[in-house]
Length: 274
Image (cartoon, rainbow, N blue to C red; front, side, top):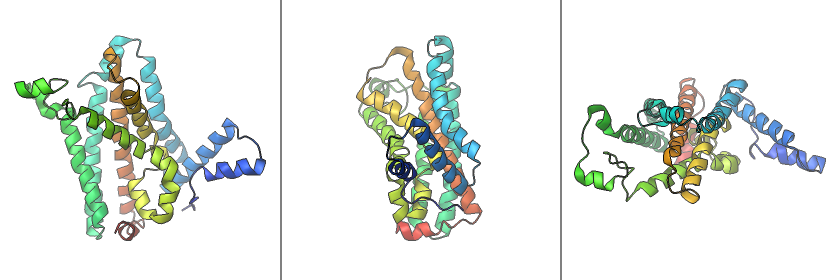
């Protein structure tokens, strides 16, 4: 296993800047970012090219979806309710349920109680989000929304996250999760790793899985702080970050499960978490 830079992925960039005594070019920034990404990929036993693809895919997908936005029929077909992006999101949350449950069981078996409970909470949260995304089967089984709930629900459906009283809080929560998986990783990963190295691997995604969280944080930030009012059909773009984030959580959970199955030293997380 390659030794990591405990001070974070940008330490090499700062050191090079000081050594040269001049402004760092974009090419140098990209080179150091790729180096940090590949170092983490090596540690997680992920091929470097695969790690780069995982980082770039959510950004490229967002750009592509924006590019097809002028073609309204195609855009709506991709982003509509019960469309391919939404069902992809449901499938991704299903994988989160499976992987998080298995990790929780393994952690509990090795007396890592707090991490086990947190992963169990993640699994239950994923079940809740899955139910909300399919309106708890309402559209599938053609169930009418009760009149009282329809009056309070922004989409007239049997869901909780669209209730007028908590819809804002739900969007804020998505923004915070996106910031947690991106901004926190960029800013504080080195500090966290120095103090709780094993717990860091269990709860902070590697650099190559941060872009889905960044897309979610950026989209929700725009919705919260800039364009709060709907703009016709274009808010369907939100289906893309809502797919990317659970896909990244599922991939991160899968990596941790693979590491645990291979006998990686995850047991140190117990001492760090207690």
